[in-house]
Amino acid sequence: MLITKLINKAGLELNLDHGAAANPRWTGLAIFSSVFLRLALGISFLSAVADRFGYWGGYGQPNVAWGSYARFVLYTAKLNWFLPEATIPVLAIVATAAEVLFGILLVLGWKTRIAALLSGVLLTTFALTMTMALGVKVPLDLSVFSAAGGALLLGAFANFPLSLDEFLRENRGRNGSPPKTASGQSGLST
View: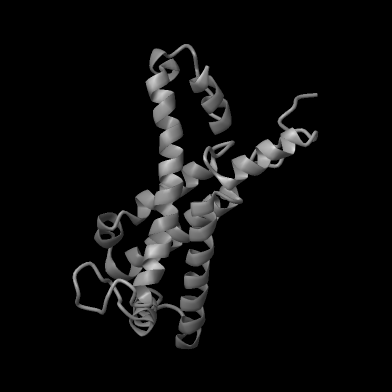
């Protein structure tokens, strides 16, 4: 009963012809995975921004990529060598703002579908520019393509358990209006 309720909340469709898909352990794993993926992507974005503002320490310390915003702008220029130099500071600001926005939205689980899909586009863009500038090994080693794929997969879910989206959807249902799915459509069939 609880598993069925969580499955419906996650928007998972089970093909009952396949035994593994109907197994409650797998459906529970799918629900956990959607929450885990949402939080992992969001926290990763926020961690990257924290790094570029020195919150994880200065450049040269263990596990610090940039350590300062100036170093991040230089890295942005290296990745986007094909763009005019004057656009690099603006591009660094836009990338940082997008990562903060998507990070917060994903951690809260608010507007999750659009945040996940746009995160997938942003991460794919990062992966491609890294490939052009540094070769394919760097974005593969840093799992940028994997993160992009995960973000796009997250955007394909219908509902998002343990999220602000889910909380708001349930409250709409309690207030007399039909609950809406993450896509904004009424959850009731006509």
